[in-house]
Figure (tube, rainbow, N blue to C red):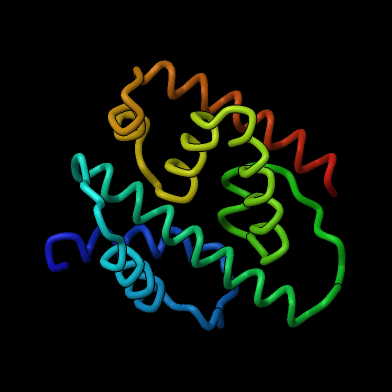
Length: 163
């Protein structure tokens, strides 16, 4: 844990950056919940450091989505979100509804093209670089760039259509 704590903390800060100021799930809580999920997994062999952080990012995504679902269930309604996939906008102003809409769109994208959805997950939720993503997915950096552009365009279209 001491070897990866700072990096997990950085990932958690990135994940929580767009949440409201008095969000009840803080960086430390997100890191600890993700860590608990990571150590509960059996028969997992991490290929390398980037692979570990990709799985950690996925765990944090699941935690935040579950949290957003609980928040949405409490509110039961409210104003309909206007959602577009602009990573700068979403990361700064993500609301529970937007995060859930993004997760649903990513799930649909994964059904059509798993690699594109992994690129988005690793980049947007994990904060990994294109080089790290290329290493994890065993593809070239230009392929990651193309996948990122395609995925962003697809997600923008889907999120606009769903709003």
